[in-house]
Each structure stands twice: as structure tokens, then as C-alpha cells.
Image 1 (tube, helix red, strand yellow):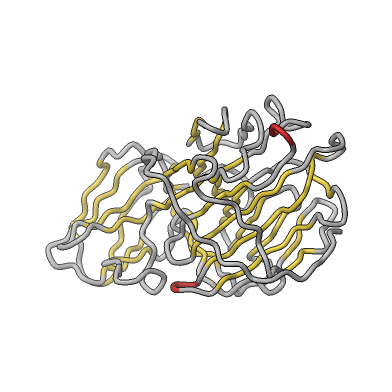
Image 2: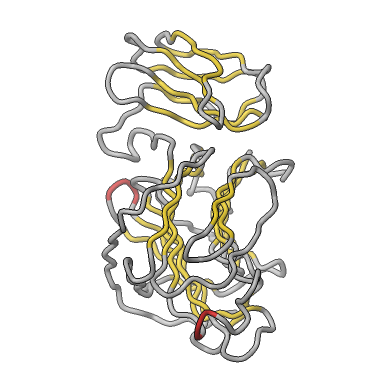
Length: 326
């Protein structure tokens, strides 16, 4: 159990460097904000998470009512159990078929004193606002005295962007976070039966210049140490956020499900002069289909299991959404 305190609300200004986004072979692009560019601001007026099951999970009984879109999949936040927080530094969103996990530590942690806490806050704003989950003054399980870390996970409902943000930590980021025992940072997407890792963006190596792994597997290498205060890692989605969650960017099509085995069902709103293109994770065109208004059925049973992109070529800006062949 972590102690509860009432804190005042502080607004955060987010400033990013011009570091180029690294191209991902799945649904997200990655960017590093160097230490000090995006100052760490402690979450305030938060909701404390007091009780965890034996496996470390806490189910949020009344999750924030905002659209959650991860890997092109909407997670119904009105459902009890849709949002779960783990004291080891990760947050999971689930629906009937898949779940997505966002991790800022994924390392067994424990409180250091009465200031230690796990909490979250939903800031209202356009398109659903911002969800922030905070892990405050925690250390490695059975870690040595003086070892601690602070980190926050930010989810932006307007854009679907995710940010892992690091605050004050033990001196020189050492005291137990050395070698390969740094935090496990990234996002991944999997069926609820854990039969496969569908998509993943995971960091390893130096916190100041991490390597990015997009391999769809359950290998989760750690960073070689804890990021310094003010370091933030941003994961920007490549998929289109559906109409209603993003201003003035209505998609000309909608997929009935983005997890398919034989047939991909696509509702086309505006078919004028448009085609639907399927590309693989490397951007290679696999299939082109002429779109008609209403429901379109695309046979995909011959595709290899994996992640694909469906792209509309209608007049105006291109729109794309991710689907997974299982």
C-alpha cells in the first residue's frame, strides 16, 4: 500500500526538441527529448492507487472517460477492468480481444518511505484530455538504501501520443539501476490469450541514445541505467485517430475490427475516386482494392500473420489505419 496525500493542481508546458522521429515498422514513431528540454513537473491533485493484488495489479474501477486508441484499436474506458495499473511501472488497457501495455519501468519496485505512491490524474481537454499515471519515490525491490526513481506516463487523448517522462532519481542514476538493470521502456500490443506479440516499440541501450526494437516478440531488454531527470521518450502514432477523437481529420473509411483472420470489413464513407491499399510492415504494397460506398469485404486469409497498414487514396489527405492478421 502507498500513502495518500492531497496536492494542488499544476499545469505542465510541453516543449520538444527538433530531434527527428525514428521510423517504426509498426504503428508508432519514436522520439527522444534530451534531458532538461521538457522539465519534469510532479503530478498534483491526483488520485492515489492504494491497493494491489498479489501479482501487483490494480484495476481502476471508474477509469477516466476518454477515448483510448492504441495500435489502431479503441479501448472502451467505460468497461470495468479496461484500465489496470501495475506497481512495477506499467499500465494496461484491455478489451475483448486484445490489450496494450505501456511501460516506464516493468521492474519490481517498492516504496522507500511515506512519500512513495502510485497515482493518476485525468486533465480535461479537447478530444478527451490527458491521462497521467505517476510512480513516485520507488526503488528496486530489495534495493540498497538511497536507490529511488520517479516517472510518469502521459497519454494524450486528442492525438493518441504517449510520453514516458522521468523525474528525480538516485545520484548518478546508479544505486542499483546500473548495467542491464535499468527500466524497461516501451509499448506493446497482444491478444488477450498472450499467444503472440502483435506489435512492439521497445527501448534498450543507453538512456541518452537508446536503440529501438520493433520485433514482435516478448523479449524486453532494459536500458543500461535510469534516464536523468527531465528526459522524456515520446511514442507518436502512425494510425489515424477516428472522427470525434481528432479535430477536422475525419477518415473516409472505418474498419469494423482491426484484428482479422480471413476477411477485413471496411465501411467506406466517401468512395469518390478512391482505392484501398494494403502495405506490409516494410511499406511494400501487398494489394490494391477499388473502394465502393458502404461495406467492403477484403479477403486476407492468404496474408502471413502480422501487422499491415490499410491506406485510402481518396482526394485530399491520405488516411491510414493499422490491422493485424492473426
